Picture 1 (cartoon, helix red, strand yellow):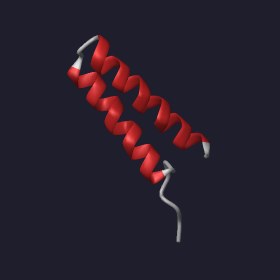
Picture 2 (cartoon, one colour):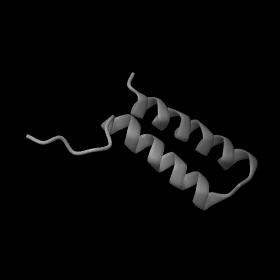
Picture 3 (cartoon, helix red, strand yellow):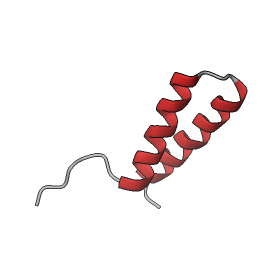
Length: 49
């Protein structure tokens, strides 16, 4: 796994923890969405083809 996917996994886990502990919907949804996006894509920049 590269660094971006590890950061995505950490964002996903932190978002799930916030969802169940603090019940802050906006922050948890933002982190969960960011985590899923980074896990699926695995990169931040668009590659030049």
